[in-house]
Length: 293
Image: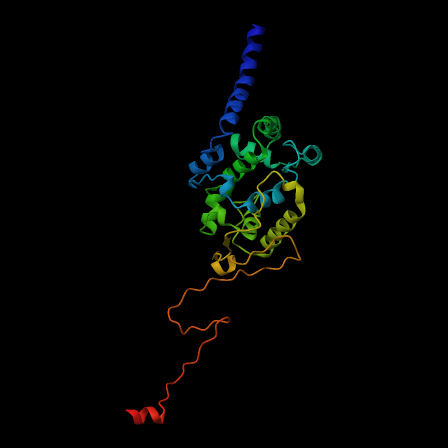
């Protein structure tokens, strides 16, 4: 009898872990279509606005802004910031107050497998699953999934749906300020709006931009920001502007203008610097010639 109970106990424990392992392996390559939070919010009547997009089709500023806002050491740690977790548990034991100390990896696990809410048990399960996620998924995949399933407003999930909802453009077109503004609504996306530029939101977005500029090599696991972009803040760069190459990063570099080719014009009267215009000579009839006639 005792052996049977032990056997059933192991099945109850190992079955969910096996399902999680299969899920993690599958979604290492496949886009995540839905999460438990999306199901709950849809049942509550908020709707579902979710569009998956590859991290290569996102603005590189988005991943960097998310790291600056939520988890500065994302590229360095193994999924859990143990010093922050210990601080949280100490505060909970002494004050009975539980606050978040989740890394981006832990938030990805929470969004993938758990319902909204806070508890010590759920936090412990997050810590237990994160090493598996970090072992199977590279950092680039973790931040890609996080940016695609994170709640960004009432019924809005992922940066693509959020950027189209708030600015009417795709996530690939967001600039640094828009990306910082979108990251500033975390971790309270249901109470904040990135397009509302009050004092709090301005300060938070500015802090994210400032932190991002200071992280340097701590952003090495996410796509870099391209120094030369074909699309400017107001549309495509004109041909005249693109004809002037600039060496980025060299303060002594001077733009060298490329001579423009002029269209050939018809006629022999056109003057050029090398070939000045010839003056026409008037034919003068002499008196002798007129008399001969």
